[in-house]
Image 1 (cartoon, rainbow, N blue to C red):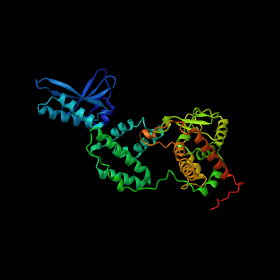
Image 2 (cartoon, helix red, strand yellow):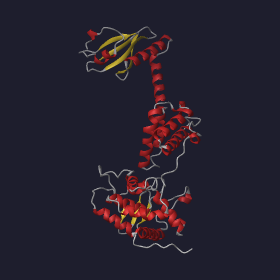
Image 3 (cartoon, rainbow, N blue to C red):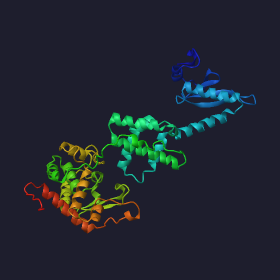
Image 4 (cartoon, rainbow, N blue to C red):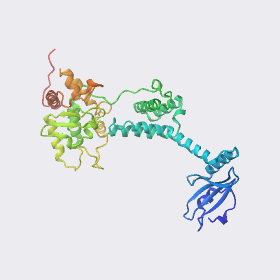
Length: 409
């Protein structure tokens, strides 16, 4: 609209949005010394006309439109006029308010949490970073993201976490989120921004779920599970499950495995340190059965660096649910998880008298401190023999044609 069509002041929102530029810059009074400026290029902003201490009139910019709405511009103008009436310099008070706004914005929970996430870049693998950041962005930031972290009370944290548990039914995930948020406040404490942690003690009052990631079948139930895997119709998923059972690696380590990590001639898989969370690189001796499976998988050219590329994007690995869903389709939901193969192997190998040090090294279990540092090739020959025995054993018990006899008591 043209400024000659303005009928009332303060200027309505529709006027602010539609007021047309002219050949020369002009200002329209909104009220109480506040003006709306329109430049020939259509740029719009707010200015306050005020009288300085020496009696001369001057202009003070308040901000651009539409970033600064009419309502906000009038609020800022009122604050500045109040400062002027007290004898304060409005330029200085404006700068001070801006500084406080910036400080307040940087004191929100989301800003603090993202700063904490940055400290985890070196210690978390990308999957862990994506999962944890995603949980905060989905469940925590929409509620507390813009709140000043120092003002969020313990009862508010407990109510939020309880409500997520009840509404979403994600008990363990909520406990992990609580742990993350507690660590975020610990980070604020050690950096001198908080004196206490509002999440301390809350875990006692949240619902505790049963740990699901290590669910596994019993030893007598293992042969039918292996046979079901061997007959799974999707070739790459079948091979993935067979390798998980045989190598008892972490599911993420296998799912994100790249061909460059494997030496099939030497029968070795070298998992680099960046994919081992806080652990050093890990060398896995491959039994002959695993080498055969990998060569079969390799024969199906996918033009991807990954063993198990995503169908939709060959530059990415399959989803982290691929093996979970396969076990579910085979009827093992709530009975066997991909991670549970590690527990099966650990129990079975320990029960068969294998050296605990070799088993722990094969599982890539590393203790904290200097005692936990180990050479990636530690016990490699012993582990290779153990891995070959285990692969042979799984193959044997899965073979229905072999009669299994119980040992005499």
